[in-house]
Figure 1 (cartoon, rainbow, N blue to C red):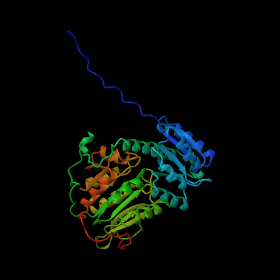
Figure 2: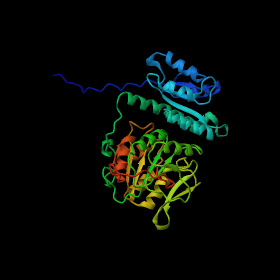
Figure 3: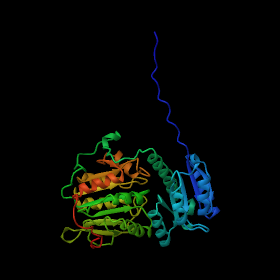
Figure 4: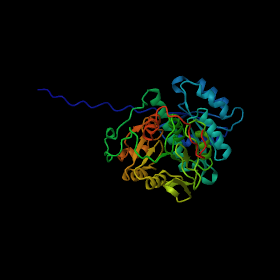
Length: 395
C-alpha cells in the first residue's frame, strides 16, 4: 500500500537587491550614502558618479537588465546639475525612480518641488551637521525606506499589479471595523476630510488631487511629514494642479468648503469650532507625536472632537503608525476611515497599521481614494462652479 506525502509549496524566490545609482559631486557624500545603503543586503549600489552628465552616460552604457532602478540625484552639481539631468534620466529604459537630494533651505525646497513637477519620484532633504549629518539614524531610515519603497512600486507597476479596485478590510484577515457609514455613498452631514501621509506623500497627494475633478463641499485638512520651509513649497506645488486651492494653514482662520489646508512644518495643525460653529485652524508647537511635528494623530483627534461622526479620515503612504490613534478616535465618534492600498504605497506603514487594526472601510490607490472623496463629499457630476482657495478666492 503506497502513501503520498502532501506536497510542500516551493520557497518563494528571494528578490534581487535593489540597484541604485548615486549622483553627487562630493566623493565623501557618495561614500557615506553607499555605506548606508549597502549595510542593507537588499540594496546594491551599481554606479557612483559626480555630475548629471556622467549619470546619463553611465546609465545608458549599462546592460538593460543591470540598470539602476533608483537614482539618488543631487540637484546642485557642476558640469550638469540635477534639474538638467532629470528629464534625460527619465527618458531612459527601463525608467528609474529618481529621488532628488537637496539642502534644508528655502532655495532647496523650491528646487525640490520643481523637480517633483518635472517627474522626480520623491525627495530627500540633506541633514545638517548639527543633526548628525548623513549618519543621523532618522535620515538613514528614511533613505532606506524611500529607496526600497520606490523600487517596489516600480516593480509592481511594471507587472501591472496596481489597480483601482477597493480591497475590503475582511480581505486582510484582520478584525473587522465596527459598522459605519459606507464610503461608497455620500456621507450625510459630512463637515471635513482629514488626510495624513509621510514617505511618498507628495506624489500620492498629487495623484489624489488630480483625481478631484469636481469641487468638494467640505474643507480638506492635510498633514504631510515635512521639514519647515518645505511645506510652503509643497502647498504651492499642489496649488498648481488646478484642483482645490491649497495653502499652509494660518492660526485662527476659518476653514472654507472646497479648500485644502496644509499643516506648516514644525507646527501641529488642530481644528476646533469658532464663532457660529465654524471650523477653525489652530497651530501650536506642542511636543512631537510619533517623533513628528506636524503629526497626523493630533489633527485627527481635534477634527473628531469638532465634527463627531461627520468626518472622513484618509491615511496614505508613510513609515510608522502616525494616524492610527487618530483613526481610532474617528471610528469611535462614528466617522469613516479609508486607507491607501499596499500596492501603490511607497511604505505601507501608516495605512497598514490602520488596515490591520480593522479601521479602514476600504484600501485603494490614490485615484480610487479621489473617487471616494468625490462621492462622500457630495460633489455632483457636472457640478458647476470653480474651486474655492484657502483664502476664499474662487479659482
